[in-house]
Length: 93
Length: 133
Ligand SMILES: [Zn+2]
Image 1 (cartoon, rainbow over the protein chains, first blue to last red):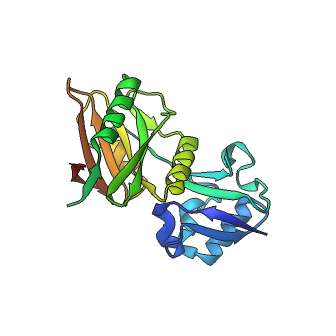
Image 2 (tube, rainbow over the protein chains, first blue to last red):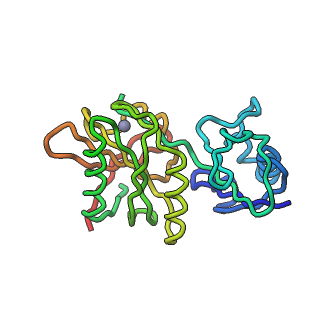
């Protein structure tokens, strides 16, 4: 089943400039796996070498942060929209 | 040299947000098209701190959708420095999420707020002109 993944500007060069890509999978992890197979340049940018989500990336399934659902095991269904967003932070120190 | 084109009204909204949150750091996103800002999206600072900010991811998602709905996209981020200059800190540089973004700083160090904008690419800070429309 194909699910839409919204790609932030910083990662678009890794997916041929697209803002939205479709990927196959039943969970967030499977979707990101098939995304990385199709676009190898994005592989290390969302999932680290330890197989977990990078802490400087936030992934939303519709309106929910997948960190508070099942992380990479979160199930996805037809019509869901997954959004990848860079973590935005800083400070004055 | 880069440039950020932005209306006085949007600049005023960023300053007002920074003053509202004082003494904590305020943060938000800029929507628009490349060098032209069309909207500001105030966001919650999850760090609730006077020294650091973590932009609330749900606010980011909402801003991203709102920008897209008007045919724009997120082109940058603003945040306040309550007691330091309007210049990116080491933390700001280390955590800069996107080399295509504008990084707007609102300093409240002095009586008169100061707003400046920068590009941060591969760890290098380059100030750009803020052109009021
Ligand atoms: Zn800062």
